[in-house]
Length: 382
Image (cartoon, rainbow, N blue to C red; front, top):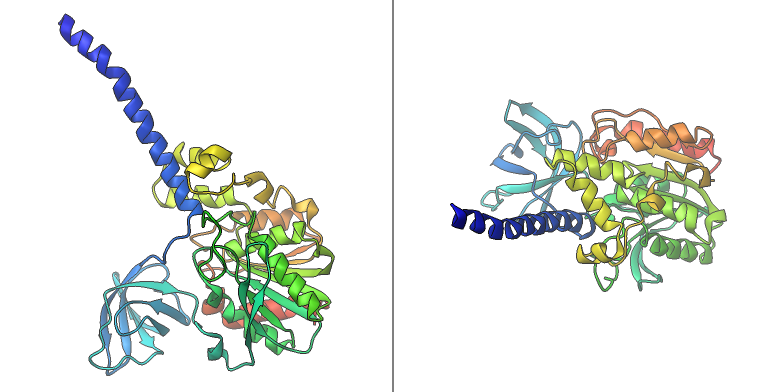
């Protein structure tokens, strides 16, 4: 018995240390997922393709069952196909019309990713455009410029883990209003320069690249700038609006499914992923600490207080249009509503439901386009 007590006394500190090490590893791994760019994740499966009827059957999810036009990333003969209306559905599957023709004999792998992108290349819009390079502190950032005659320019900023193509849905609306559109990239997004660590700063650093895009537009004759940010691009646009040396030129901000406060978003996503407190809170705490943030892959500590634009609402000066579905499912609309309540003098937030994250255009193109057009007119931006 005595030898057993000695063995337990000897082993217990090692067990506690091992548990602490495992806990620390879990915290740092969770934090790393926040700041490190990730590849597109497959979120549905292709169950069948009918090349005669040009239909496709997908596993049913809250996204794949949505009405409207969407995209599907897959592998095999086709890397990307466009999807049309839902033709039928049951408890486990959805059959949709194919808008990209799939030929007989084509290989289409089972795993796929459902997307709101729809357009992949600027050439699909059948509008004049050109490639340009934007100077930024990170290096030259590629951008697409869709020219028009107005001195009010729209600068679009895409979201986390995606590319500029996300923004193409808004270009026709702006073109119809006669506004030039600059679709920008930013550091570590897979197209713009990679920094030493290659990690996201959640808007705390990326805004400087968007500020470079504003400087480019002003040098090209722009007098007023409308920023439009999608998802994390919304966080970047808001940081630009309060930090830019050109902020007096920012005449408006459009936010599509935006991140307004990262802590709200990360806690929601942690719950959805089945992660319980205190792990999410500890992960955010690690990211807020310079030493632990670097262990997590971040280049600097993430300034969550500075990224909380509800708390900083008084610093905002330009009118804001928020387009956010209350059924977003990925970035909850809570902080968007809180910002609208904090600054009713600046924020316009029409109601949208059902549409899911960054898919309002896909679900309700007419309502989405009308909301932008009406707001731009009301703000005398066209």
